[in-house]
Length: 332
Image (tube, rainbow, N blue to C red):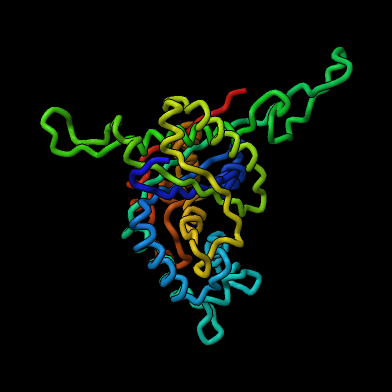
């Protein structure tokens, strides 16, 4: 194990999201999608600053300390049609038994300030592909049997699952990011971030993956990708470096998240908030190369917009912290 500076990397996945609905509604071809987003925090500032601020944030709105926050519920409250008791977060924004939009605005503004005031970087990896036909395993090889192209996964009997492919790529991107050092004021090279061969001795990170999704079914593939990376290295990073920097991976259940717990794993709640939003922006940038007339504008996913037109902006805060992102088309 490295004796250098410790980081915590919180990771979440995103499949199809709101952008898919928009494209489908506009008659555009839609893809199968899978992305992985990670937020990496220095241990010291995470434990001494962020965890404390996050606990105060939760206490201010009197959220249950033993339950994880799911930000899809908060986003549904942005529309008046979603402001009802069917939403588990609805009651936290009542004032004199009336839903308070102003209190919801304060919630997102407080969240914006926490993110802006804390230190972390983001790595994002996205894959998209088309559904397709493939021949299934069969007893009589002369009798071709096709699998319907309605299947999300293509030829699982011979191809690695997309979560495995994405996680391998993501870990490579994460390693490349961690192995760089900021250089400012050097006489021979311009200011920037450069790979540093001393970094494996100076840093290591513990990975924490959100295993709480309703359709979370990729644990085996994700863990296999991690094991293969530390066993043989990534596409770009040597094995001896990968095993030094990637200390461990754990999959965190919802029962382990909340200010009541130690650790609280507030990083998982934050990546839960940002993962789908970042995926939306990344995919929008890519899909506009194909469909320039898409009705969605930059910032649509990373900014929180209320029905009265008021916007709480997260776009700049997030984009300046993305150190590495890739958008990959799988052509089978």
